Image (cartoon, rainbow, N blue to C red; front, side, top):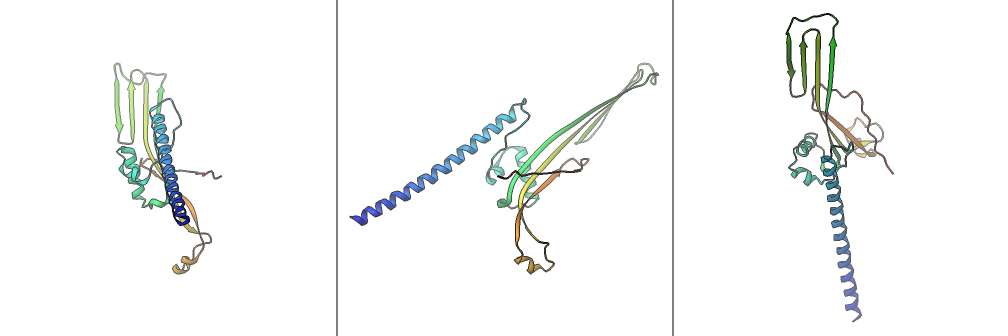
Length: 199
């Protein structure tokens, strides 16, 4: 009888443990879904200047039908970052617009002269307007897409040995490596800083 009671207690403990684990997984999934809903709501609200970070598993990112998420996944694959080392993937799309006007005191164009022309490609557009009597206007806009990935990488604490098998035994630390890919060929990364706030 005592033996049967012990088996029942052990069985109930295992079932309780499995139920608690299942509950935790369901709560994590629920919190992730709630977070992603808030992120989509903020994405659709044009009045907000800040956004909520999405939470996806690698599988969810790979199977996403969103074109931007698909491109983010493609960039991740191009960089050959292992799934277990991936920390974040970020995407930033910006447009820079500049309008410059020059008005000359004297008449520089003939009566009824107007020229309105565009020079453009996928990443920039320049509109030049020349009008009677003395107006010169240049409107420029630049599109930029930036992809940022953060991933873990192991590096030796001391300078790496030139002898390859010695490097196997050197102490290593995990560092967070950040890759910034600018799709616009006219854009150059001049300077960048990334900070991870740790508690």
